[in-house]
Length: 399
Image (cartoon, rainbow, N blue to C red):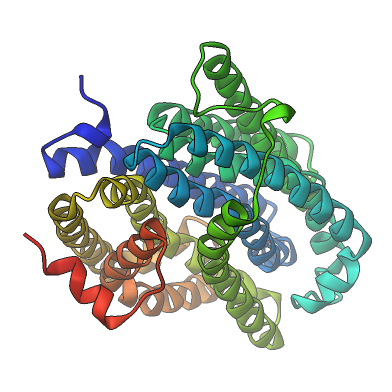
């Protein structure tokens, strides 16, 4: 069977890369919702609020990994399209070591400043202890969170679609099981939720590294983990970081926006923060699926660009945007019709259910356009260019 990069049928190629990525993102969302669900079983709004307040911090840690994961993925895919496998392997090696170093720095800084950070993200007297507990165990797992999230993108760019998806699903499945054990069985509350998350990423990281070692032993020149292959040069680092930083900033700015919003909502107490947090988690279903679609096609776009196949690149964009808008519209309709029953899964207080349903009906309105935003954003990341009107018109002008 032809590799996904050689697939001539564009819709089929999109499904081969898009569906596994969407599945992986869906399992990530399921574990996020499981965190909230098991914590909500304590019937303690302060705990739910703490998990909500810490969610942006977890996203920021993941976004740091994306500097090297998404940036490296873009560079590697384009190098493969140009048939420069040796350079692609050297880039892979640099990105793995850079993510590891960034994770260790984040762990150290996070543990040193966890309490001031908890105050910054909006924790109050009612949930300060729970928030600090969550942050402690998330920062302890920071190196593995970064390695796992970065390698997802790097392995996809190397054509290891199956391995990247299996690792993501494995880590999230372990996370969900440990959520039940730590929160429901052992009553560890937010500390248990964060520990389950970190251990899930540890397992995913170990799986990815084992897969890469096997590939390296078999002589795959794209997978080079040994320190002797760590040979970064100024041009390589610049190419990776130039693409990775803007992609990471999107997540960071979204997280900062949520931190600011949580601070304002916190004026009304932990109940309000909990209601918004649950609505936000439910609304993340279409968001994560559309992110998965966009991330899945990114290596395809980079490969086509490197190989000079402009028509296939244009067709990939058109089909992907169509799929994204349709999927987003379906979720918008569903959330508008069933917001209260969905909220009632997590909450028992009628007032909180009504409030959460209202939040969800507002949040879901943007879902159709996310299909456009995510795909176009990843298009420019794949090509290694800065977005402009002229370049955007170029996407649809061929074929």
